[in-house]
Image (cartoon, rainbow, N blue to C red; front, side, top):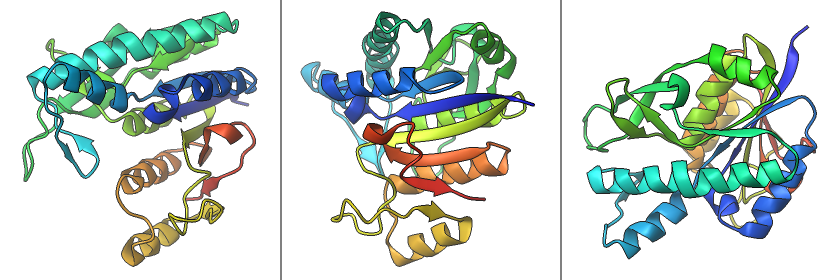
Length: 257
């Protein structure tokens, strides 16, 4: 029987609010079994970029990452945000280690090819080193993963945190019973963006297709759900999209294959 592993992805809006982050890490500490945390931090990167006179460009919720912006996201994601989370976990008695994809060669990516849009130094995940991660996890170390990868040739790449969470969950599904939880500011996937209580409790692939066609699901929720369904198809036991406030309660939207 496989041991259980919970992978929690937390967005930048929660990470960057001290009280929300502390509450999430408190709840995270009480999750049973092994744990891994993936974080964002885009708002902090945008704020620092503005202070440094670097303009932010977004397309469909995706950051265009030129050389100047890459320097900023590496500083913010791997440095400021990641180490604040690691230190907070240590203070709660959890032995954590902060990782980018380059550390221990955990995640390699390829620079996204230019089709209609040049995203710059953005990486699409090619391989996750599940052996290294499994070894750390079984040593009761909690990996805290920043949304950065590398190409194996010395180039860091900005990589979507939802994707990192999904690809990591898929890679570890052979070794653990993996539950993947996407935490953000809403209670789950909503039927009506203006109604906080209109949570869709269960979603299948057919439901997802219909909701997108109807315009119920749009924007950044589309790639999040695409990652979720991809994870289920690859053997991840359970995927839940929920609010940080209900972490561990199995509320929100449960994704079914």
